[in-house]
Image 1 (cartoon, rainbow, N blue to C red):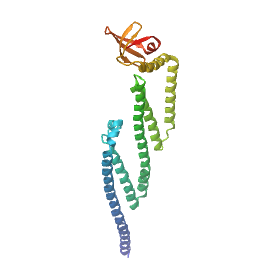
Image 2: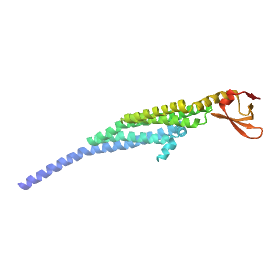
Image 3: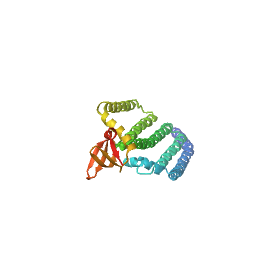
Amino acid sequence: MELDLWTQSLVTAMTALWTKVANFIPNLFGALVLVLLGFVVAKLLDTLLSKLLAKLGLDRVMGGTGLTKLLGRVGLKVPISTLIGKIVYWFVLLIFLVSAAQSLGLERVSATLDMLALYLPKVFGGALVLLVGVLLAQLANGLVRGAAEGVGLDYASGLGRIAQGLVIIISISVAISQLEVKTDLLNHVIVIVLITVGLAVALAMGLGSREIAGQILAGIYVRELYQVGQYVRVGEVEGQIEEIGTVKTTVLTDDGDLVSLSNRILLEQQVSSR
């Protein structure tokens, strides 16, 4: 009697186990199909998107901004189009993995993957903001450098890099905020730095650099009045203009000497030219 009871209990347990296994096998098969399908779809989108972006010239544009070189320094020595394709690949695959985990009843795994899938668009948004910021920084560099070169500033390239750096810093702050990371401290630091730099420039221009500022303004007018190669005579100096700089003009005399004259002298004194 006891043996029959033990046998009946064993049969009941085995039947319950087999029922669970039988019910799990279709779910497992469905999950495997989803994962396999996810790999195929993700790989297809990766290939198509990478080739499309490459044909549109994205790699060439990003190479001009210096972003490709920057990524190479951190170990990402792949074209931007390939990198974007890989990001899309993993995002699509993650969506299919979430569905597979749900079909297997793995609620915790599914919830974790679901949270990650919902967070990835914010990462893409931050990366897009940073990408646009790099492009705007490159544009700001060119505009500031061109404007500075237009008025004859010798340090036009440095001013362009400063403008580019400021735009990149602001873009990084905005990109981080897209990730729902608190950037209040970073924003305050940026504001303090900008105010400090502005006050320092204003103080230098107001106290110690008024003479230089006057020379720079004089240089603008000198370029309108004279040209490189023109023969001039200022006081006892007589020769050919070799260079019109930011604060001074270089004259090559008949004796072969290079003489530097402040731009203000060329405006305030009588100048003979031919």
